[in-house]
Every structure is written in C-alpha cells, then in structure tokens.
Amino acid sequence: MRWLAAIGSDPAAILFVVGIVVLIAVLLGAVLAGRARRRRERRESDSMAPEKADEIAIARWVEEGRQLFNLWQERVERVNELQSRLAAMAEELGRLQTQLGHMGELRAENLRLNQETETLVLERDHLRAVLARIGELVQRASKEGPP
Image (cartoon, rainbow, N blue to C red; front, side, top):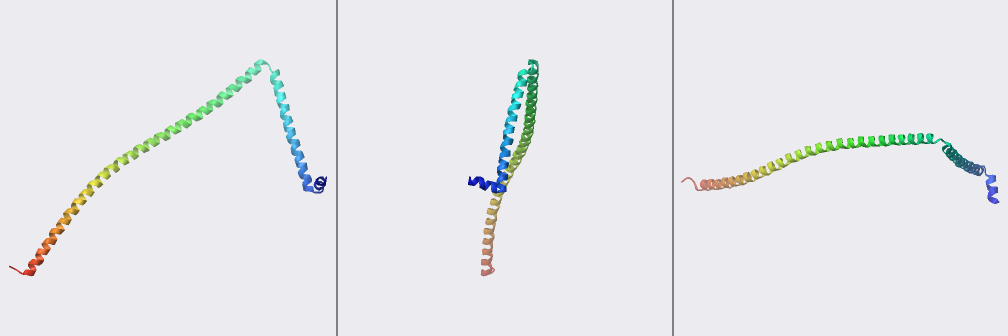
C-alpha cells in the first residue's frame, strides 16, 4: 500500500501510470479492430459470388504478373548494365595488354642498350690503359732525353 500512496502523491508518477493505461487501451483497441476487420472480410469472402471470387483471383494474378514483369525488366536492365561494364573492362584489358607489349619491347631495348654500355665501358677502359701506357712511354722518353 505504501507504493500506491507514493504514486498517488507524485504527479509525475500519476501521469506515467495514466500513460501506461492509455497505451494498453490503444493496443487492445487495435487488436480488437483487427479481429473485427478480419471477421468482416471472411464473412464478405464467404458470401461473395463465385464469379466475384474468380475476378478477384484473376486481378491478383494480373498484379503479381505485373510485379514479376517489372522485376524481370529491372534484372534485364541490370544485366545490360553489367554487360556494358564488362565490355568496357575488356577494352581496358586490351589497352593494358598493348601497353604491356610495349613494355616488353622497351625492356628488350633497355637490355640491348645495357649490353652496348658494357661494351663501351670495356673499350673505354682499354683506351685508358693504352693512353696510360703512352703517357708512361712519353714520360720515360722525356726523362731519358732525345736519342
């Protein structure tokens, strides 16, 4: 009983309790209204003429067919989009393969130039050795004097 007295003395608690009661009443009303609507629909469908039921079934099938058609149309559009993207990727791949071929040619050219450079370095070193030898001979000849 103390908690009841505590709730009765606090306006916020009273509002909270009233809110909960109203919420429960609204939910109960919604449930009862739904049950009543379903009962009405069931009575109407039972009392409907067979021709009317056939028309409703056909209308549902037509609507489902429309929805299915729209779904397939969207999927076909998506497939077309993917095909165009795939074609663009194939074109890009071809371009990259062409560039890769050019890179292979450039590597071969680079290898040939490196070999030529090595040959020229060897020739330069040989010429330096010859010039050094000539320099030594000139120095020796200048020290010894003219013959």
